[in-house]
Length: 408
Image 1 (cartoon, rainbow, N blue to C red):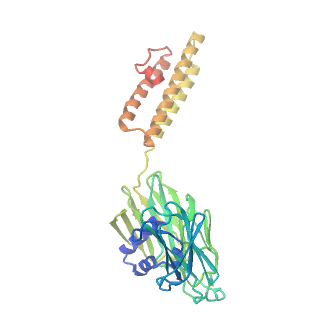
Image 2: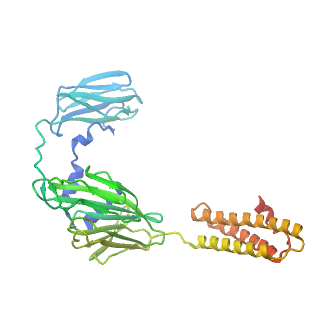
Image 3: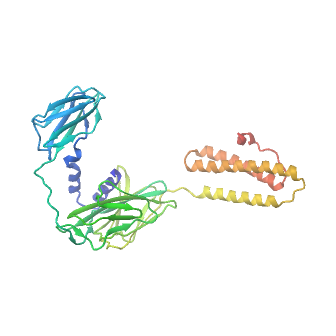
């Protein structure tokens, strides 16, 4: 998710989209999300643990309230000061600790963690603010949703695959929940592998490959759907065709530049490359896309392994089979002696061929350096040529110079 978030921030900057609300979202998280998470610090004495107790917001400290610190089987207590903090000093280094308290019948506790030997630890316990009661939901009404211009398609090339992210911002502009006329669902490309929901997606979403679905109704405001899948890229080119069940206000695509990767689409009207710390990215934008109209993207120039070693291995296999068929039909004057020698040659040939296939596999997977590969390959081909020569002449020839090495 962090990589996809970097991509989104990059494309927002390039496309000139207002990013202040997004930055504010990351800078001002819900305190409840931080509740109970220990944070190592160096502004406390070594072995000290500070627990801050608040109600709902950072500005609402809970003072003069007892907090417990469980240190192994030992229970320590302290009361919060005017800043809402209870501090425990000289906690045994390495001991497993956990902070707990109860506020208005609500039990709060932190994650368990090891007391530090150097520096201290700060954490918060956040109680629910009773003044903020949820408003009752209105009854759902018929309506439509749209994919806002904050929606993105992000593509990250890998080793003979590309990872594709759909970061969709679905907007319901009505004041009440809406039920679209048809179910909000779509199929990812049939070649997609491992389609998954990402963190931050609505709980109404589900995936049963290849189908992605969101259960109605859609609440007022924004609903987020973030999915990822992989596509094979063995030939260095990947074509993505995707349609969504709602109007897309603005097409935005981000591709991480790997090798000579390029992005092309008739629906992209503007494209730009830009460097960031994580590498170079290609950002493409286009106009609105109606619901049901396919978005077609082609990413070419991707790094991929050559198919030549596979063709070499296949050709050798065909040659071996052809030789075996020919040898089986050849006249044999001295059946016993010639058959025994031919079996020996065939066994040697099979071993050399298997060694050659294994060498090609090691090179493809990076387990053999180029120098070792070139020398060993020449040895194997020379030995195979000798074997084939002996088989063709139907008479045993002298042993190859590297026979002892190959037999080892």
